[in-house]
Image 1 (cartoon, rainbow, N blue to C red):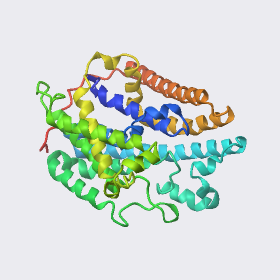
Image 2 (image 1 turned 90 degrees about the vertical axis):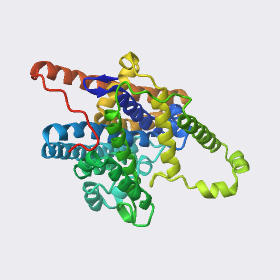
Image 3 (image 1 turned 45 degrees about the vertical axis):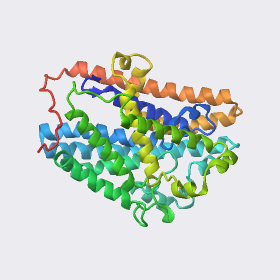
Image 4 (image 1 turned 90 degrees about the horizontal axis):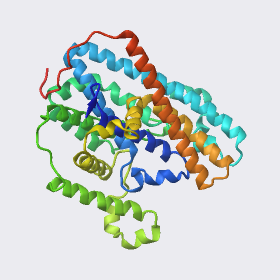
Length: 387
């Protein structure tokens, strides 16, 4: 299902990922109980990175084939610069909000909770680390990861278009090497990045490979149904993962039924290096959703339409969500931490994120009506082996 050249299903899940990230970062939020991390091994971070790769390869791959490598490269680097500036600005705004909140809300140490102690103890070095993407308080990790992955696209995109299997194979090898010592980017005070780019790049390029496959696949090609063996295997794995994740809420029960040999095999299910169990869970989930989710006009109706709209302005909505999360936490502390208060602040934040997307869409539509560009030829289809 497309709208103005966009796949609305991709926008839908990008919007949902932004909502899940926001809800997951509000302590005690009851709505966080319905996010993917509570019923499986992966969470909104996998959705965000996979769809970032999908959208990037879809957009810049078409641009490369239509206007050439130089134009595509310059557009990618311009986007990287926009993301970098947004990261610096967002961090400054976030620190201002957290420091102000910490001075007016006595119930909680917001500076410590947000990981800003390092800035207070080493302000000069923290500023340098901020510019080098090494200083990343809580909530800020996805954006530097996206910056690094997108910055690698000028080198990897032509290879992915020409030799997709070889590029994905090399990416997989790098993913296998990522857990080794000294295979992560450095953080402050001898630390490392929470999201290891050498591991998460594989999911990013898997998203790009999925975009290529979707473009190559004929529109009338038969699609696998729920009776397909692969779908059944993925569904069974998802159920087993859900049972495992739910058992963590009851530690005594988990210890009773979990064999020690199995625990030694699967733990730790690491997020930093994207544990294979997490990766497989997300891929199984993505496959099952792609099979059972129909396309149609329902994507243009509320509330799916609003989720799609937020997905189309993912950077702006993500930045707003990062700012709103500590504000919602502060409001919860001031108003008594009742579940109704937590529910109200979470829904209010969602409403503001939707309102921002509506406002940005309105501004864009006004600009388009004024400029009225001349019609262009339709973009070329991405194909494997394209030069």
